[in-house]
Amino acid sequence: MTNELSPEKILGLGFGFWNSKTLLSAVELGLFTVLAEAPADAETLRRRLGLHERSARDFFDALVALGMLERENGLYRNTAETDLFLDRAKPSYVGQILEMSNARLFASWSRLTEALRTGEAQSENAADKDFFGSLYADPDRLRGFLTAMSGISAGPAQAIAAKFPWKDYKSFVDVGAAQGMVPVTVARIHSHLTGGGFDLPQVRPIFEDFVAQNGLSDRLRFYAGDFFEDELPKVDVIVMGHILHDWNLDEKRHLLAKAYAALPKGGALIVYEALIDDERRTNAFGLLMSLNMLIETPGGFDYTGADCQGWMREAGFSQTRVEHLIGPDSMVIAVK
Image (cartoon, rainbow, N blue to C red; front, side, top):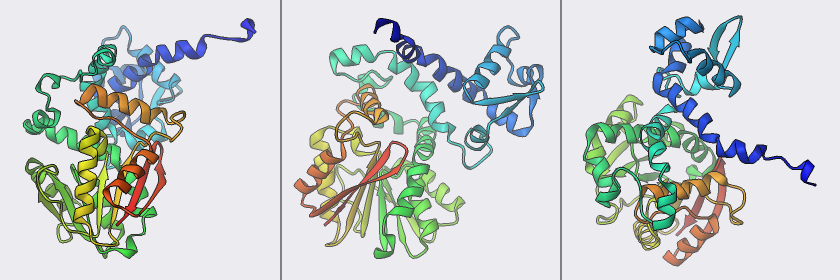
């Protein structure tokens, strides 16, 4: 049996950060945006990116081996996926979240062992005990963070727009809306809906700019407030996406209770996250995201669909169900 076993999987996982950092550096350098303009040979690409000659070729060929670039007759070009999703000039660009990962999370995750031993956050704002307060106080960092949230929400937003029965409702609000990817996506597809986004006041200009760019200012508005302190807007559907996992259990229950209080009879709450599978065996991304909440927040953690349905029923919701969206993300729907 020993001869049939191999350490390859273990070593591949242990050195996985090599793969990750190679991609993150390529995104940081704008490599995929340069190649979206035209294929290039190694020397041209090296000069465009301002790289030293020593390892540029190894860097480019590593990206070929990782499936992030193609090379033919000495010319490098993007793959179909990197051309669509990692070219900064395209609206489909999702590299914002990777840029944030490179700038912040990569260093914070090097302190995971300390976080596991102490149960304390390890991000650059850990000493403040207020990650969002520090983040929202810096306009440049805030805009970058909200743009990154749009990148991670774009796919789920399309699925929510397609899978939820919006024809049965007239109004909605996205609580913790960030830049507004979910409201814009839903409103663009369902022209009968009006609604908006609820977030801290600092988000208003960024949200309103994004909505205006998408020609939806007549149907989507910004609601300023603190969802722990202020009442939520009175609408038919409340959406909470990638929000509950930021908070401890008491805070999660508090937010669900506030949503219940704001909704009319028959109104619906949509909570979407990278939900951990109920058996806690297969959705590795959801489990790793929960570790990321350990790194980033004082008490946040991710959870299963069954967990969330239980909290929703405790809040008073009579009907709940879980529905897969895309990739690791699923939504939990509750009806009052």
